[in-house]
Length: 328
Image (cartoon, rainbow, N blue to C red; front, side, top):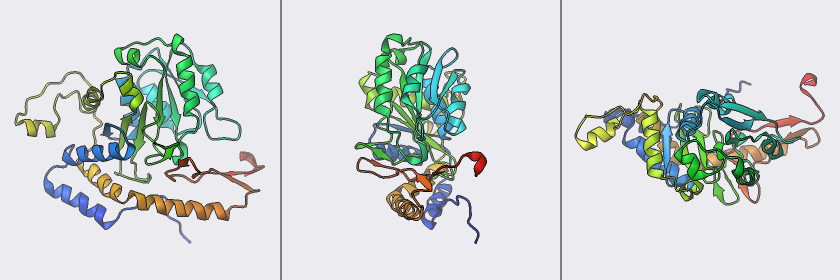
């Protein structure tokens, strides 16, 4: 029996949506990207979302928007994909890795607390396997208690007044915990729509931010505008804005980056989003069958569903009880 690796779930309606976009003549960032952003924000229960080329780009641009760079430290878990750490290096900050709780895949808040210094500007939590990190309350407590140590270096850091709490939610789009969607919990959350994710745009990602940012007096519209500048070479207008304004003149306000999403990608995302609940249902059924199949005394599995949380069901991680890596 051949089991193919991570084939994307592409249906005929997805293909037709992409074909219509190709025929429309608008294939770069345009109306479908803007609509996809609105739909992501609606699903997450946030005011804004911004679509970019990847979750990696989304995390890096978020760090840059918050003024995090050389001389700063960012704490994250050692048990994660490289992007959670590499974006810290990209902006010139120093990654500080902490271990997981014993017997757990989740970052240990006690180790986070011990790792905080006057240089700490952010903590990146990871919603691994599609399960929203269960200890955000403890991370926020640490950020609040460490306010006297916090040394802001720009206007937004000063407005927030504490260590930034970020979520690498690459696995967790559509997941929830304690009545809040992923995207509503951390200050900023970044998602991935890579080919192996539950919802795919082939390559792509998004960032959104919660009410904690708005309540700090940080303007969401200005944040969105800055993401746009950072993701398109610092152009004061993208192609859609130039067309709507009826004028093609624009300024380059700074030598920024190139990581915007295209309408071709967004079209695929919009189509998949329309049937996302059915994707959830299918994954939940698969997880149920796996859960029933494993002998509990031999295999430890993650709990994807509970009274107060719902996973996106992205990965099904297992641990062999009583075995170490050398014995497997």
